[in-house]
Amino acid sequence: MNPAKQALLSAQHLNRSFGAVVAASDISIDIATGERLCLIGSNGAGKTTFVNMITGYLKPASGQIVLDGEDITALAPREITRRGVARSFQIPQLCMHMPVLDNMLASLHCSRGERSFLRSGREPSAVAECLSLLERFDLAKHATRPVMELPGGVRKLLDIAMALTGHPKLLMLDEPTSGVSAEEKFMTMDTVMNAIDRGAQGRPVTVVFVEHDMDIVERYASRVIAFYSGRVIADGSSSVVLGDTEVQRYVTGSVRPTAEAAA
Amino acid sequence: MIVSSAKRVFLVSFLVFLLLLGLGLVLPKWLVFLGTIALANGLVSLGIMLMMRSGAVPFGQGLVFAAGGYTAALLFNRLGITDALALSLMGGVTAFFVALPFAPLLARYRGIFFAMLTLALSMVLYGILMKTDTLGGSDGFNVTRPTLFGFKPEAAQSTLLLWGVTSGVTCLMAGLARLYCDSTRGLLSLAVRENELRVEYLGMSVVNIVAWNYLLAAFLGGLGGALSVLALGHIDPNFSYWTTSGEFVFVAILAGYQSVTAVLVSSLLLELVRSFSSAYFPNTWQLALGIFLLLVIRFLPDGLGSQMYRLLPKRNNKD
Image (cartoon, rainbow over all chains, first blue to last red; front, side, top):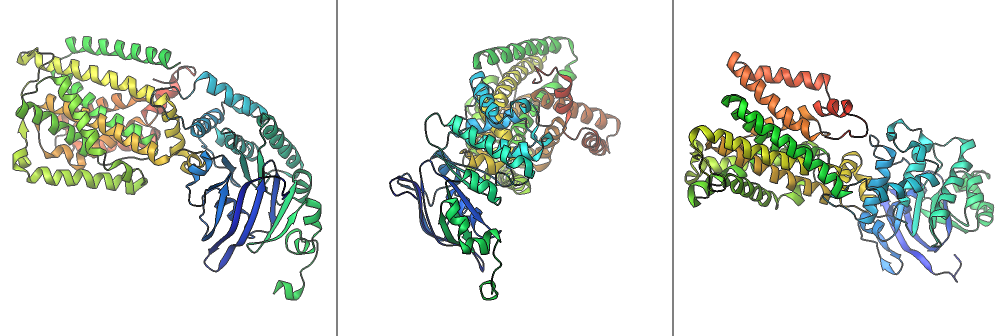
């Protein structure tokens, strides 16, 4: 992290285990405002556990998470969301039988804390705002279709669009291109990053994303953190991290692990 | 937006109310009585339908039905309050406050756990009522004819007066329920039904949504209970018995969760099926009722409301 920049989020000494499996071992990460941070690592390395701890789904056994100077370690997911941390999911979490527009409207009302008993849930101003956001993701044409009729890639985009309805300060994307075909991955990421930039309206949106495709990592990340067995093994620019021998050995697989290291 | 939707909804409700009043004047008395019971019970099922929209089906609405019914009956007999509208309103308010302490707890449960907890509460009330002699014990007690704004009807007019009050209250509640279903909270209820996890991650309290739906259902249940007591002229602990709660769920399943009108139509259908089957097959009418429900589940798994929803024009596909 550039020390000149103020940390938007500071996670210090996070620990979390699932039985004998250590998913987070003394993880300390500062995330600066405006960063595009990518988390890499093999399956079970602890990337999603880190995202889950930041967003409140999992509580760390020890350690502290501070957002904008406020301790959010013990807060419930919705409290963390209200403070400006939004997320998307590896498996999109959508309302499958509802139309795309209703998914967006529900997200918008949630993020605004709007829960009126009589005010229409489909007020023109809310519909216009949702359609505008859908337009940025090229999803407006699907607005009236039930989500269950949509292909996986479109669901991924909708999942991220829903997370953006609350204008978050920190957006966490869990494998935004998983399940998307190889030729569509760049297009998907371009769409997502452009939509985030266009929606920011001058305010920086910090993005943390989990990714397995190293081409995506190189192209979209300003900073990369590599996880292995619940530990951070490298932190820096993509060229530095992807060039690290430990990362090559345990994450990217470009160097075969030695017998003793594997043991 | 809210004003225009409300205007449209209440205009339709008022027109339906006038139509029902007119029908009350021409239909035979037995059918008007049956319709009164159907609408009063339909209000309880309307509450269940609101709950179903947030993914929870209570199997113990007998609790609030009895709370509303006993409140109206006791106010009538002990305090001399005889106005039908006031009694029904107080029945609804009492049921709301009876449900209030349980709402935050129940809202944390779903599926069979939610259903059984609500059932348990209604059966606890049933047990208390059975053993409380001052409330009539297992025999219950009677209530005579109510008044309306000081007007005391003759015996012959009483059925019509109650029909007017019940249909008026039902139309008003149906209109409000429609507005609620279309409101932001109504939309969020559907989102909770579909994906609770996502709703929490979008910053909304799922417990709050479900708890309020339970409280609204309690108010409607209490209203229905009070109107039923006034129509039947008698109340006993069976108001809180599990078979009574089961019938409300039956109607809600028959109607589905999409249409307010379907709930009231389904309640009327249930009363008709029960009435005719008990007349023609007095010993096996429950069997006829069971077969009816099986057929509905087989051919209309989303309820009558799904068909009504489909038949209406796309732009106005709400009723």
